[in-house]
Amino acid sequence: MGKYVLKRLLWLGPLLLAVSFVIFAVIRLAPGDPAFAYLRLENIPPTPEALVQARADLGLDQPLLVQYGHWLAAAVQGDFGTSFATKRPVLQDIAAFLPATLQLAGVALAFTLLVSVPLGLWSARYKDRWPDHLVRGMAFLGVSTPNFWLGFLLILTFAVWLHWLPPFGTGTAAHMILPVVTVSFMSLSINARLLRASLLESANARHVAWARMRGLSERQVERRHILRNAILPIVTATGMHLGELIGGALVVESIFAWPGVGRYAVSAIGNKDFPVIQCFTLLMVVVFVLCNLIVDVLSAALNPQLRLGEGAEA
Image 1 (cartoon, rainbow, N blue to C red):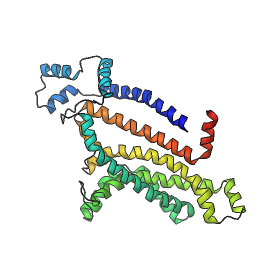
Image 2: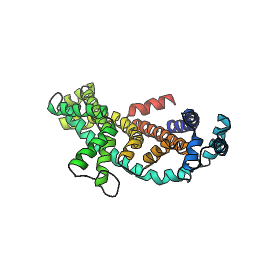
Image 3: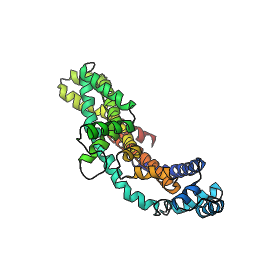
Image 4: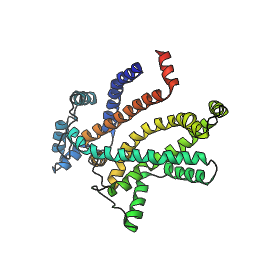
């Protein structure tokens, strides 16, 4: 296990290096002139002379590889540039906005697990009966409903029509309900459907039949032999959901005026604030890679076959 984790960590550096260059290059291939956006935010008329000077000040007049080399040399020291809009270091801004995003994503992840696991168990237990059809219908809606549309629908229903919940902002637990449901609805729908399928597959396994033949009670069979094996796909999916929940905050935070890093990134995209966009995108890549690593380690810890397979490779 230790060798496996070390191997993955050693691959992390080259992977992030390659991804950072792709991000750096793709952003500069996007339409629009960042020098023009910079002058607009500085309230400077974008005359031809001002544009030339702005490109020189931002280093945009240099070859792409030279620009990337300068950015990388500063980034490894923790300097990801200065935001065009806020005039503050990008890392300082992200550190200020990130706690609100992590709070939203953490509560959404807890809500996903607390709701999806009982729904998956309920659906599998009553296979092809009305509870199963209800959960499967909800899962279909969850994976096919865009979260921005769901957010507007929840605001219209519970804030505008019923006046039960606040539509925007932060401050109380009630402010979290609508954004948490919006950002987690797709993930909990996927989890519920995945757990149902995994439970039904595990219930038909040969070792489960042998457990019943040995005289174990149905509850013991479910807990020891069905649920333990069926929960492994949920562990994998949950790791992916964590990255999705943080990434999904990009839109949800803007809808609900949640003061997180997603809303900050959306404003940066509108302003063509290159330093912010680069740092935020790289941060999302790091989150997904680390989630993958954590999921792999947890899966190996829960599944002895994976541990044995890793040992055999070593």
